[in-house]
Figure 1 (tube, protein in one colour):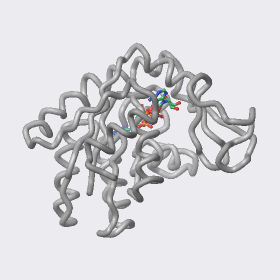
Figure 2 (cartoon, helix red, strand yellow):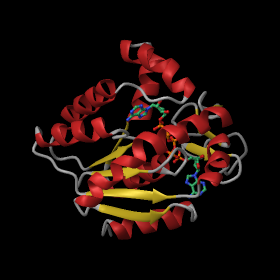
Figure 3 (spheres, protein in one colour):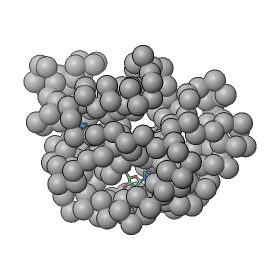
Figure 4 (tube, rainbow, N blue to C red):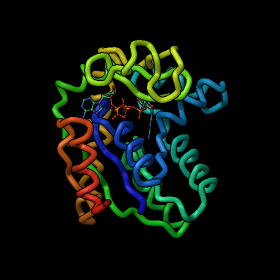
Length: 216
Ligand code: AP5
């Protein structure tokens, strides 16, 4: 099963994709994570992406579609994939259809996380992750059980994303409304969109996604 998780910055795409990985053996393909890894490694893609990401603007379509195609080839045919943060423009939606068709794959569902944008700034500005294993936390909604110690790996170094500040979040929201929201009708016309309330607790949202996808 191949699905897209769609929603504005902070909607919970990464949180829910990671739960689908853990609980259902699916594979999360996050273009944001891949680009951050490229920036960290100082690759050509990373050098192109860094300033755009720091400003909250989108990286060129051909760059992200290229890395998605490469990742799918690495994974092979058997994996069930969650596209997290991709596609984000009409051109990327067209590219994804082609990428999937060339590999005898097809989209099964698009899960749209419906959220109240005013709450998202708080979600994003309070976000931090373990510097060692990447486990996600939040100042208010998900603190480590023991202060300053990662629940997952025991490390005690945490980090925050450079684009998780209020000004950049506003630009990311604008980009979402202008370029990403308009691709929804493409999938609605195919009858594959499942709308899920993204404003409940993380567990409630997970349960709603599982039931929308008929996962046990
Ligand atoms: P990307 O990394 O994709 O960022 P984003 O879309 O802005 O999404 P986020 O990661 O901010 O939010 P999320 O929905 O995953 O929320 P999360 O689960 O973390 O992209 C970053 C940049 O890369 C872009 O700006 C662009 O420059 C570039 N880029 C990436 N893909 C691209 C593409 N395809 N084309 C062009 N450029 C691209 O949750 C947020 C916080 O809320 C967390 O702290 C979490 O703990 C908390 N939380 C989650 N769910 C809940 C809940 N139900 N209740 C309370 N708190 C919650």
